Image (cartoon, rainbow, N blue to C red; front, side):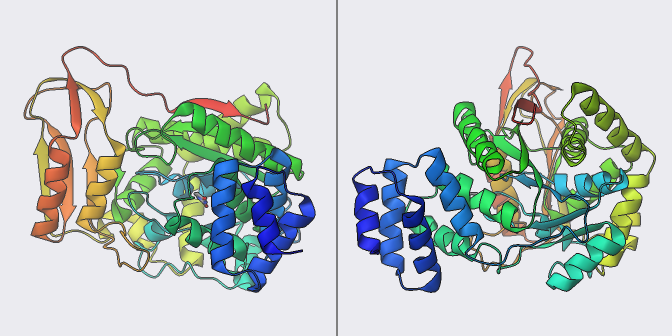
Length: 439
Ligand code: URA
């Protein structure tokens, strides 16, 4: 078989065979198919698309391009979650300990933030000493011993995806449904997940800005997972405005701790309870409505009675983090300059652009513009009003936490006109738009 023939067949709109896809991914991983041929193939896939069967084959070829984790000796069932990325999304910090507190052990690998979208590892590293780089043996041992582990994604899992993603980034081929779906699902399957809750964000601060597109992506990922025997549910959640109020690493850890004490923003609590309940339901293999209501109640109980927070402490301590920072979030890294912006009009909030808030947080240094950039854990933005809230001129809109005046000014300029006001009452945004799969 020759790579050039596989490229030509996809260019001409053919459905590739399982053998062709396996050959292409294997030869690319081994280095016998060079980047320029892979780039041409990616563009052909981008333009011609892939059938469901081709997408499942591509996913599994990427899974088998590296190690596949088998956690069955340390976890009764491996239930994972994945967020498609957004602004203020500190869900994993809350949901993982919450699910573990409900008696379902969890072992998750997470990523770093890029651009306006934050990453769980960066947030965890705001806690002094927290180690995200665990060996595979440590990862397994923590899962067994503590019932919770949250560490960085191993480069040995789905390495073909890592290399293909780097090519997609520079060849304008990222936004293809089969390529996105197979990329996400290959990493989850390689990490040993038996059951997966996908949190597909939709809106101004998400990868998918339109609901129809997000539904298609969600359906495809559920089909891939189910096609290879995993239990999968996809929740379509709002990302027009940030989730919760805090955006920026230490600020988000502090807000996660609030939520773990049964407090904090209502949308964040609602979001985390639903994700946790779906994880519990999938782990217990019960799809009934009754089971969902039971799981929601169990999750709420463990959030409010302090058990979820206790599990978070266990996680932080086990991975070398300074637990006094979660006991007293005032000890987390703090910015030197704190300034609050105020409303320029009275009325109701009609739009609070999550993308602009996320970019303002990057302006302040909380995120990276390039992969190799350093980040400042202390800085970020706190949102005081959400869509649907009444607002009076002069009331606080955003508080900026900065360590640099020039950066502060840049973020301020960006946020000055971010809120769209309405003279008439506006409806709050829903937390979720739809649920796909595992009904
Ligand atoms: N996240 C991934 O892991 N892969 C994609 O292709 C897009 C988002």
